[in-house]
Length: 325
Image (cartoon, rainbow, N blue to C red):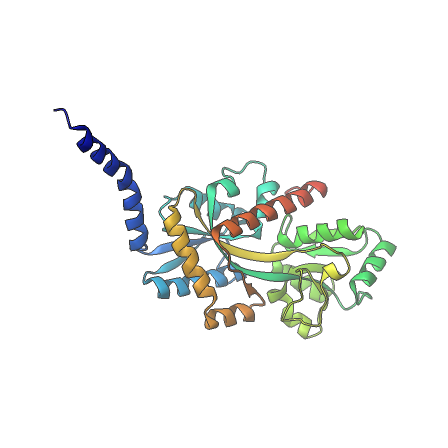
């Protein structure tokens, strides 16, 4: 049967617009079932706590459960791979953190590319790293620490919570910018590192502020500076590293991502609701209690930020020749 030209063109136009229409319909109905947020760390850590806080806010706002699924292992790579392989339908999300940006260079043979295979959804929080020393270290300022380290090259122990961790690369960047030689002592996590730092077995470290702040307030550790570009409200009298080493910046951060090819309508809906949740006074107060600040972004802004962090720490890892043990 031969169709009239006008009828044929009408049907062709409908065929072209149906997929777009169905996408819009899906995003309007999203979420129609529970959504998983995959966290690459054990329950109880800062990333897990923030993810649960946002999951609760999204559940309340969107009327569907947002469920946290902890998949620790391989420095968050197992969790990332699980999300990369998930259907791009908005029902599996990834808690993206600074570790993911570091891993892009640290690991030689990943089965995924973070910037290519994970679509950025939204930033969640940023929190300072704090440069801290055991009270036995005579330095009370960053310049004094630099002078002390130069007088004892290779003797001052710099602890971190693992090779290639945020605290490690922050320390390596400090070494490069300050021109000092410090002895790196890696631990398996912030907890064991803090135990030895408080006990005086090691002398200095960059740590997440939320983990260290009570030790600092109790006088068991001395905070010399925060590593963010601006001072922390939690330690308003403590200067920034950049006050002494202009351009220095290192922070712990987190956000949400989705598998690539997730419909843009769903990503923008999630972004809108996440940013609204971050503005909720209850959530903002809880984030502040953790020593962090809300980090609302657009998807494009968060994507650019991940790319910048990947490039920045990639340069540090290559320059310091950091290798997994």
